[in-house]
Length: 413
Image 1: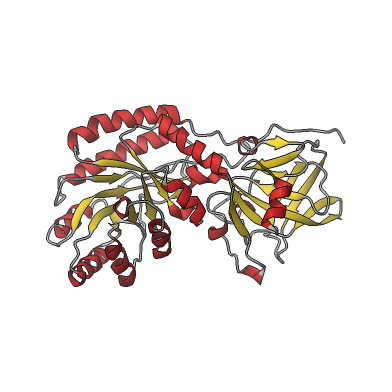
Image 2: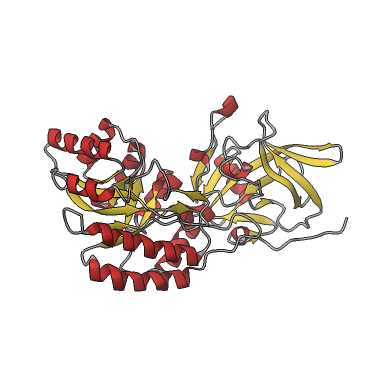
């Protein structure tokens, strides 16, 4: 077979290679595995996290606040690191709220979104003095009742389900019927009711979709979101001080994906903020909420080959990991047509890709597939398989208790 080395995926190229071994945080992968003491594990690179924030700061308007959506990766060390780099946090549970409040980030820069908040969760959020993003009329009434009991006047923002869809998103979270937010056409009446309650209205959260690689689509979506916010502000009980326009910035998971070009998007956003927003909503702080885009490419999932087998001419590398740790890479987390994440043999980065092999996990299901018929260097038992783009929606988005295998460790280097 003729040796062939396809071009490195950008996510792979972000990590240095020395003496044929991938390095994470300046540490050779084989040594890092010894330090961790077990496989599988997730590793997150501080340098790449910091560089990503720097990239965003260079291209986004300085007047726009950058928030990290903790749901993308709630590992405390990751959140602690980002606390010194971003302007705020967005949480989707009380556990995430605790993680955020354990950092130096001021409570006033933390917001709580998500449907189905319980009275207990609302009580805790009010006590913590974070902003609560209202997802429904029922939730608004719960917040008002909790506020009356506690004697505190919480800051609230209304989450609005826009009356338009954002095309090109990997996951649609706005437009049509949704469990998220109040429908745009119902928002004026809800705002009038909110004005009769003893709540500190600060603004809006309007978000349409995630994992979008099309800058032109994101630009158009931001324009429509701002237009909707300006329209609804006429019905608001107080001036808009907070305008969370979501994020939706995607990362290139697959071979044909083109990375998002931030420069034109940032220029368009600056014109939008300096123009319509400043004119119609002069007190508004525009917030860009990003999760996957910040952490996704800074993390890897590492699993060890424990068996190499050939079945009717096809090579299978059986690992000690699998979909119970990295569900998204298996294709079972939203993919309609399964495609491979970037995968490499981390301790054989200087070897030619000479064989087609499938990387599978240790679970008793054919769904446990980390790479399907991928051209790789020949791997042997004991080698380390690396799944890139694993910094977001990895461990906490996976069924870690499925078949009761050990939970992998996470490290920050």
